[in-house]
Structures are given as structure tokens and as C-alpha cells.
Figure 1 (cartoon, rainbow, N blue to C red):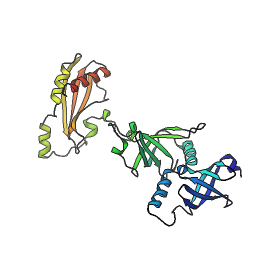
Figure 2 (cartoon, rainbow, N blue to C red):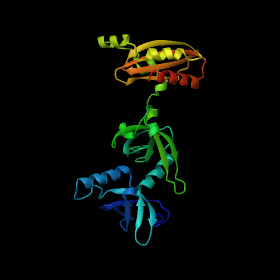
Figure 3 (tube, rainbow, N blue to C red):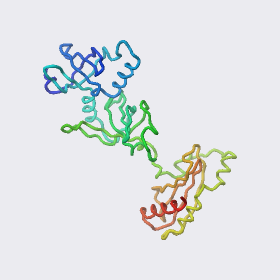
Figure 4 (cartoon, rainbow, N blue to C red):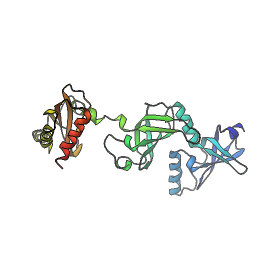
Length: 294
């Protein structure tokens, strides 16, 4: 009975599934406990809802054994939580920087909630948030633009916060930090080391200036503090990155200035800017140079 009083883990076998959740038999069947839908792991909640839609005569959950934590005991009923137990265990074992496999379980305006695989060695079924800013290096208007519920994704653990008072344990993940940062890209990183022979169409693209790029270079040369703007190597990518011209200020260290990466359609080209301006100043100069074309 100590588990009833102190919230220790107990195992329960599902006896009945109803609209509100599951009824479990705990302590060798001596007591009945209620596991609300809101206190199940998200993957289990989705399974229960799918069974309802199929009008199955008997829930697939009946007969399953679930580890739970007792959260409330009164004269009328015992309430348990699977989610609380999974989160508490997971945050004790999971470390920032770890890579894990997860499934998208819900989407909101501010991000995507994912649940780690049930086979995860550290925190099976633990749930956490990928904030919208951590979904992609590119701007994302809404998570549904790049993800769907049920998608399998690889994530990186950013932060692990244990439960404190009434605040539940929380974990945040990143999708984009397992992808290459475009600001670190050069032609050497985005193109294969051994380039295939270009086709006739690719030869034509290589001879075609990126739309609007020469005008931007000319505008940059009018900026005070910029000594030279030198178009560099050009290549053709295997896929379309963006139909519109995109200009990236890379993080590559250059002694006499900065390298830019221009991309439009499948075309990509390096631009070298000779200047002693600070990084913030060159960003403003690029913004003015590109805005002048609009």
C-alpha cells in the first residue's frame, strides 16, 4: 500500500476501456485504478482513439500491462498516470546532446510535440517539444508545413528540466541541429567532392548569371567600407533550393572580408566581399543592397 501513499510505480492490467480512459487492476487485482486519456503517453492515446474510430468491439488495450504512478487516492477511486512516470524516469536518464528517434504526436502553432521510441535505451516514450525555431534553419510559418502527425524523425536533446513543484518535467528537442547549418556552407560542403560531368542543360545554367545577383553586387560596391565584390565559383545543385535568389552570409573565416553564398533555383555561387566592416555592418549593407531591387 506504500505505493498508494507515496506515488511509487505500480503495474496494472487493463480491464476496461471507456470514453474517459482505461480501468486497470493493480496490486494483483485487489484494486481498480483509473488511467485518464490525458495521463497516457501520446502514442497510447492515439491508439485508443484509432480503436474508437474503427468501432472495434473490444479495445486493443484490454489485457495489456502498463506501468503507472498513483497520483490521487480518495474514498471513491484511485487515479494513476503513465505520462508522469515516463517523464520522471526519462529526465533522470536523458542527457542534452543525445541523438534519438522519435515520432511526431501533435502539432501546435509554436512547435511539434514528439515522443521517443518505445525502444529508446534511455527514455522510452518520453515526450518533448521541438520549438518552431528548432524545426529548420529556414523560416517555418507553421510546423504543419514540414511535419505531419505520425512522421518518424531523428532529434537532438537540447534541454532536460526535472519536475519542480507543480511544474511537470520538460524536455526540448531540435530537428535542425542534426542538419547542416546553411551559414556554414560553401561550395565544398553542399556539392559532392567528385562532380559528375554536367549535362547540356547544366552547362547552360553555369553560363547564366543568377537573376539579380550582378545588381546586388553593384549595390554592395556603393556601400561605404566595401572595397571589392568578387563573384567566385559557380555550380549546379541536384535539387531546387529556392526559386527566388537567396543570399547567405557564411560563417567561414576569411582574412580580408566575408564570403556570401548566392542560390537561386539549382544555381549556386560564392561571392567574396573585401571589407573591414564588422559582421553586423556587412549584414546591414547586404540588407540595403537586396532591398534596393524590390
